Image (cartoon, rainbow, N blue to C red; front, side, top):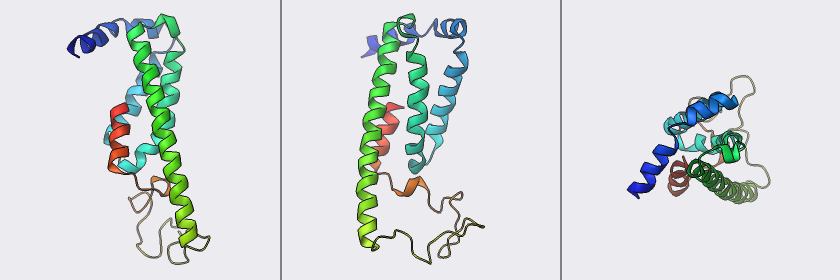
Length: 153
């Protein structure tokens, strides 16, 4: 395990020079920004960041053989892991959506919880989506799913 970590660190020593030569140094900074956003994000917000991180990693893997094999393998494994998590989230969303639709008689929102188009607030709580009064694309993210996302991160 320690040797693998040291090999990974050594593989990254020339990464900035390689990325600069290929015009992809900004891509690395974008990934760092996304990872920082994921680190501080609420659990429900992590789900929406998965496709962004996946696309950013795919951009780096497009360098192929120019990357050190250790880095390329790590990036490709991260993409695979993100795809698995995204698939699991999609299944959960489909299950939750179908369950809510059945419970509500075909409509997920009621008159009292529908958001006002002007204020973005619900009649029941008065909390806006921006203040944490909802969000997460209508699903609650289970702690084990958050752990999977954070592990890939």
